[in-house]
Amino acid sequence: MEYEHTCMIRGDGGRTIRAILDRICNKWTLLIVATLDGGTLRFTELQQQIPGISQRMLTLTLRNLERDGLVSRTVFAEVPPRVEYALTPTGRSLIPPALTLANWAITNVPAIEASRAAYEQR
Amino acid sequence: MEYEHTCMIRGDGGRTIRAILDRICNKWTLLIVATLDGGTLRFTELQQQIPGISQRMLTLTLRNLERDGLVSRTVFAEVPPRVEYALTPTGRSLIPPALTLANWAITNVPAIEASRAAYEQR
DNA sequence: CTGGATCCAGACGGATACTG
DNA sequence: CAGTATCCGTCTGGATCCAG
Image 1 (cartoon, chains in turn blue, red, purple, brown):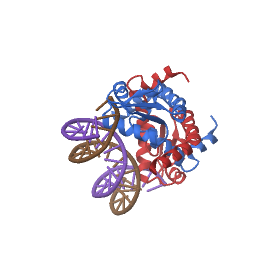
Image 2 (cartoon, helix red, strand yellow):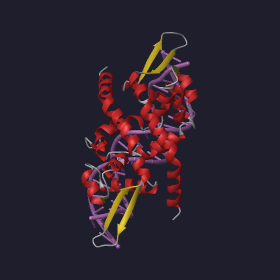
Image 3 (spheres, protein in one colour):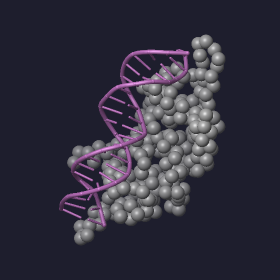
Image 4 (cartoon, helix red, strand yellow):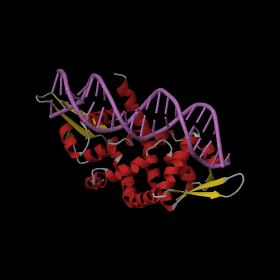
């Protein structure tokens, strides 16, 4: 509500905000995080619960999330192999902001689509 | 805190959340919106206040924001030409969720960077 | 002053095939 | 089961030059 607060976004020339955007703004990250919010899941379970994701992108995105400390990866020395993924505390802390964003999307996307449609036909 | 709420993110297979991410998750959108939160600005003023943005990307991003109804564009029939950009109500409504995200970033980016650094050297 | 047009390099992501 | 490797088209964004 107070304009001055946007300095949090603009503060360092956008480096901080872009650091986070670089991490969550790919096609699958938020979806994986939201799915893991339901609890620990294995690789195949994740793939089943996220329609349309390829093996490759699931692997890549999980690796990035693990590297950034948002997701933990536990390998069990069994045959057949079992690997479990879960949110770390940091990963869980991303849920509330993500929900805020989702709320905004649900509220405003219809208007945006309409505006876009009106803009196109001209 | 309640896990069931993540259905807002996962709901439609991620289409809604991705619709918004597709709009704000490019390199400059949030920065432009945050800058315009301070009030109406002209093209050159925007370029000056957003370090590092090229003419091309400023133009492109502003066009997309205008098309989506987040930013209004007012052309004055003068010489030299003058064009003023401002947030629409929809555009302004994006600020609070953006701030939530920025808060998360400021809090967690250090930990993420540390985790990433630790992960690299192995 | 406010952009449009063009060229170009690199990142992103999908499909497919193969492996311990 | 849980990946890795490879190929390949698409999109993004930067640099530069030109124009009303």
